[in-house]
Length: 267
Image (cartoon, rainbow, N blue to C red; front, side, top):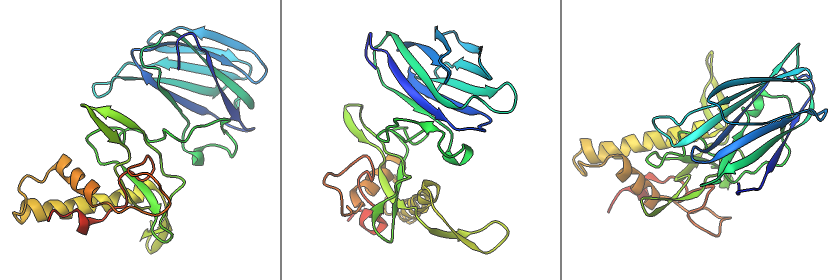
């Protein structure tokens, strides 16, 4: 987002959608007004930043807009946009969210919808960007952020979020840090038996268990008594294996490569 440059984001809403929640994350230092245009062309805004909830009615939809404060753990500001039905469903069609900058110092922002599984098929941003799709807590600099890949084909999982390169304390910080298997993972199923599941939620446990094994080797067995957080991450990054199909390492999909505990052990 640039000074004196209004941006418009189009949100397609399918029929029979009971509610939609949009989250906007931006730098708290940036001051931005928001306008909302309904599918029928009715507009409300620009709405200036007032902490707390504001309510507006557009046709058969009630809009709840809430400007949040920075949290104790983040300098970013979260803005909620709730589309609520006045009867059974919100108005379908293309909604437009207009961001009008008043004072810009950073200019970066992200806009999110709930998981696709909670929305009707087709309810989505019309021109989404997949280049910055990792979320809290994976955006934190001191966590190990894990992407997912298919261990059968050694290819990147299309559902895995993509990070960004940022300068942290003078060093380039790449997210994710590493990737682990996250496609068709066999695990125990609710009610008994086994099932195949996919997701980064099933890639992260591979790294959690590997970190425990690495810390057992270092701390419990006395090979490296100070093998804690950032050191574990450094070992994982160094031992990660590069997979085919990528010209640059690290990158915003696989980080430094695929998890490899054996190669992560210091010589």
